[in-house]
Length: 369
Ligand SMILES: *Cc1c(COP(=O)(O)O)cnc(C)c1O
Image 1: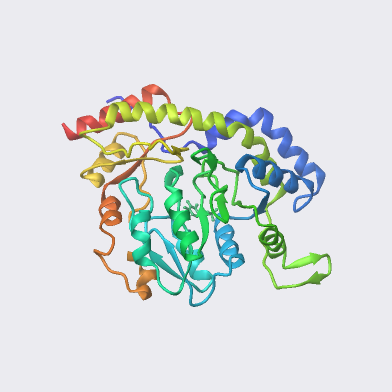
Image 2: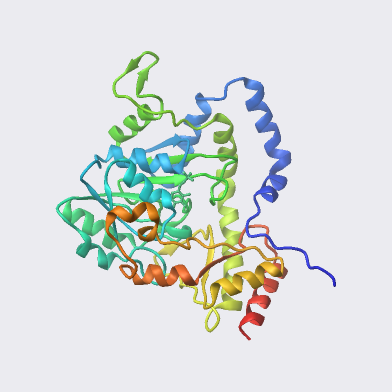
């Protein structure tokens, strides 16, 4: 029997192969310079990202998780505080809340998998300090109601925009909507480097200054520490790769939107639920998620036919063993729990061909026939 070529779920190595001729000289010049940590490349990246997002400051760090932890710290979130957040994010969102000593206060999501703003007010307590919406899969949250609630109750808003560089809401970019925007540039994100990287965006001068200290031991100059900090600097190599990729991000998003349009055309409706884009959204589709019946069976069928897929995420955060102490139980967040059994991230990257998408959809249709 002839075996069909595999269709991978992501295409990280292909991305490098495509950029190789232009990227290798950049990488070589960084290595030849002998300057690998700190220096002007970091500042240039920060300026370029700040301009792209539409904020005054960007601070480059060594992970999206640190961006969230440091961000919460700078907003004054600490022991005894609660942070409103959805239970269907990557663990890092809740992990960051826990690591500053605070407690996650989960709020269920809507059909689009993003936090349902209408449910926030019921979750507020006298300890609520901040709201952390997550722009899951690069789909922007409906931010106006969230910002209005934050304003009404005097809460800070920290956007987990790890998956959403380039997404926008009513013309304003992810990372410019709350007090702080936190990004990851991990290889699997839409704006990606070749290792761990993170970024914070903000208009707040004082927070920007403090973040620059915190990432470098708390040093204000070579020999003076004003508060004890961390080591969370972005490598020059990663910064230069991101500087190369930033101007190319728009084209990648455009190609992915075209893929999504074809997926929608072939799948939407009876077979799969794919949340429609609302008029305020401009999404990046970092992942392309379909909500389907018999998800695990379908995933196995795809795998048997050489098609990769993933689930983001199979276990809601409130049901993780590590979250036991927060007192949540099965049944607390019906939407997230139901979606966790139905969501499937299909192959989705800028190198996917029309033929590959048609083959994936053909397999899916055959499975339900
Ligand atoms: C990836 C991710 C993070 C963490 O970013 P890292 O760079 O891997 O530390 C946080 N939140 C969300 C939603 C993510 O997808």
